[in-house]
Each structure stands twice: as C-alpha cells, then as structure tokens.
Length: 252
Image (cartoon, rainbow, N blue to C red; front, side, top):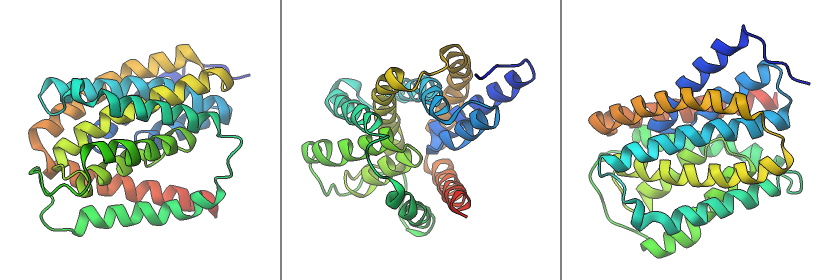
C-alpha cells in the first residue's frame, strides 16, 4: 500500500508543474510524471492511472488556453475529440490483453525519426501548408489510431498527433500544437475513464498534481502562443529524443 509522506509532496508537485509546462508546448509530460510517481513508490498500475488523472488537468488547461487565443475552434473539433476519447478508452481497456512488446521495440526508432524530422526539415513554421488528407478522413483514421495508442501505451502520443497535423492536415506548428492538446485531453480523459474502473487511481494525489499541472500548462501555452515554432520545434526535438533514450534504457 502506497503512503504519501510529506517529503514526497514537493517533489511530485514540482514534477507535475514541469510536466504541464513541457506538455503544453511539445508533449511528453508523462515522461516526467510517470517515472516520478513510480520512484515515489506508487505501484505501476496505480501510477499509470494516477498519471492519467493529473494529465487530464494539464492537457485540458492547455487546450482551453490555446482556444482562448483563437488557435483552435472547439465547436468544429468536438467530433475529432469524441473519436480520440473513445479510442483512448478502448486502448486503456485492452492494456492487459494486447501484446505491446513489439511496438515498444520500434517506438524509440519512430520517436528519433520524429525528432530528426522537426530538427532537419526546412520550412517548418507557423504557416499552414498543403493539406494531404481531408478533415473528415484525418478525423476518421489518424485521430482514433493515435488516441488508441495514447490509451494503450501513452508516451509519445503528443508527438504523433503533432506530426500528423503538420504532415497530413497541413497545419502550421503552433496550430498543430493547439489541436494536439485538445485531442490529447480527449484521449487522456477516455483512458482515465477506463483506468478508473481497473487501475484504482490515487485521486487526491492525482488532483493535487493536477493543480500544479494547470499552472505549468497555462504558462507553457502562453509562451508557445507568443513565440510559436521557434520555441515548439526545439522542445519537441528534445522531448522526443529524451523519451526515445528512456525507452531504450528500459530495454537494456
């Protein structure tokens, strides 16, 4: 049984704030909070469930912050969000039933490729470009696929949403980030619904960390909205690279 001691509270709150800040800009907040929860002694299943609790606060705050700045229209995106949430719930439900070892082996390669894409590809800025998939096709295929992954495994989902919006939907980097946070919130919420039934999240701890996530996400979204691709691109490269290295380290 996990017991929260006073010396752990500042560590968990600081980790949640940092995760909210980073996640609002480039994704990868779970890279910070999930290991910290496990280092604090939370059992793996409860750590995953609790991470979803606090992650919902951060992603939701970032999505609302971007929407308030006119970067995403919530009314036109609710169908995509609904699909992401449903797919996230299905993924979380199948966590124990679907073999994910093979996916975990190729995930670091994919994340490194994403980091190289954003680091080396010229012309990636905040301007929209040619759309390769219609909005309907993108919502019906790419969105539920990544939402399912977010519920099933999680790490890197924000980067996958980002690259999908940039390469297939034709969004500029800042607009892609804004829409990524909306879908991240939806798939997190769907995953949380499933985990709440089987993972026994630590609700009070998750909510306390969620408050810190709100502060970090609001600051991150504000900075990203002001600076745009000049901030988002390097942070996305860093978080994707660090996540890939962490996954490789876990395999050794």
